Image 1 (cartoon, helix red, strand yellow):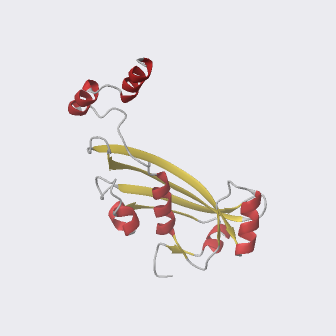
Image 2 (image 1 turned 90 degrees about the horizontal axis):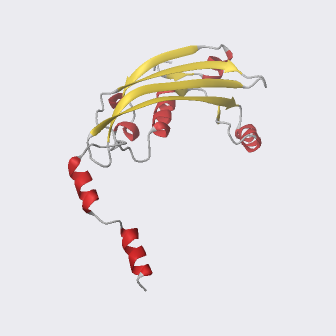
Image 3 (image 1 turned 180 degrees about the vertical axis):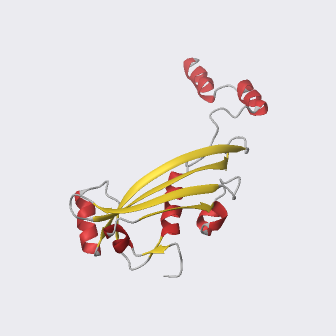
Length: 167
């Protein structure tokens, strides 16, 4: 295989191989780097991939992805750091029927049908996308303008409660 990111997942797991590396967000697929929340597409993510066999004799891939990427806060629109350390075990199956049966009996199982070639970069991309918050926000933006506007506004529910009690 000429692409260093391609592995034979069954052989990789059976031989208990390991792989580690790094990617810049800009090196990943457009579905990652075009995400509107990233403030810097040159941020780096690290990954480790280890193969093995579980107690049931099933081949698996353990994937770990870590990074510190700046995201755009959806309140103040300023960059904010987002640290993640995601791990997951992907159990390999020979066919769809085996995968479906295993997933029905264990809802926490992450599995896939073992292909001839698997792109490690795609696994890393999926893990990053699952780690991203739905709407990144600072705990406290420190934006005095937003705080001032919100302080002067009456709580709409308090206004409604006042209308209800005056009847």
